[in-house]
Image (cartoon, rainbow, N blue to C red; front, side):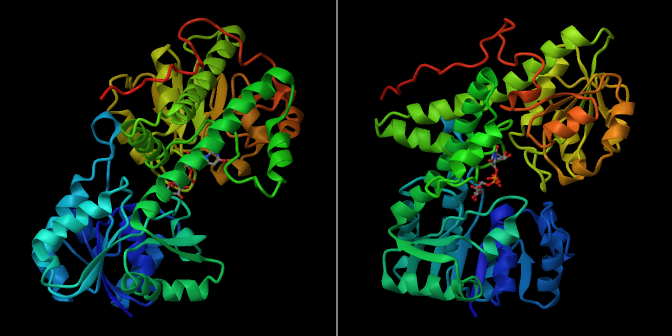
Length: 475
Ligand code: UGA
């Protein structure tokens, strides 16, 4: 059992702290946000994550886990491992802003009172470990034996506990055998209980870059499929068949090949942008990343324009009403960051469409986010209490986030509630046959069988899909 201090009670920090306490370590979690700490001490999680609050309560009750907002208190237990999990937002010009990690390193340097390892779990650009070593060298490294270690996190929101406890791999970027051994012992309970988890030791630079590489590779797969879905639409092919066809090749696999409205969230957009900046700084070029980003953003506009085009020809009433199911950037989270719903709602509201919104979990976050937008119009945006309330008298239903709940809706009833029973399925969530059986006009992504209109048709206005000219950075 180790005494571990986790700094930062955000997504990664909190899930790591709770999981490590559950695995048998004595963990104290520090965050400078006193309100958050007070809530956590009461057993209330600031984030929605399946299973998290229950485990939080158990770990706090068993005293394996405690919370504090004070560095003095945190260092009283002489932690042998300090995990840095503060956020690294996108800074100016797309660069990853590591100032919070640096500030934490400074505080650690001022407080350190025993030999320990400092583990950087925040997502950081290559070379950050070196910078943190330098900060600690000037403050504390001479007095105590300290190793700085890179240990990126690969958990997904909505499946965070599972991903931590059953990780495909634990990556540690280390410069000494001692550091590797300490990391092995921290993760020993996990490696024992999850035999498929690989423990990979490498240098910190490779470890730092692996994190960006993983997210960029996944984002690339999604954009590739979304690009291909447009070819499927034009040619009468079905993107789901193609996914199965290529995914059956063991070299490819089916994961992250789901065509839809593209990726959102706090990670992919931020990390691919940061990798782009790293490449541009090194004068390597970043054409691939530009294409991933362009396809991802145009996918949303493309979808919204398809809906608008449909309404213009199929609905005579004014104002036209669109229902939206699913607001968070993906299911099982209330996270609204970079959610496709935001761009789609903005697009429609700005063009005079009224929208009726529903999400099973993210309504509060969505309200806070949307009501702060310059385009927010309370007369055009209705917050529904149930999925069926959201579709009352509407001209089109847009499925934006694929919450399981929507599978339970009685499609017959759904049809009777709508003014015009048309469904635009942004996640290929429903079956084409079922929707046809119930008599919906049904449109999905890259599954052309039921397309009534050509969704790629150019209806004028801004250019909907283009490869941007590669902007080269001037030094
Ligand atoms: C992602 C990575 O999957 C994690 O490994 C990583 O740790 C995390 O970022 C991070 O850097 O912290 P997350 O952003 O929580 O996790 O969500 P994902 O489940 O990866 O989904 C990302 C987006 O891709 C979502 O908007 C989802 O709807 C979309 N997606 C995913 C698709 O459009 N198609 C797919 O086939 C899969």
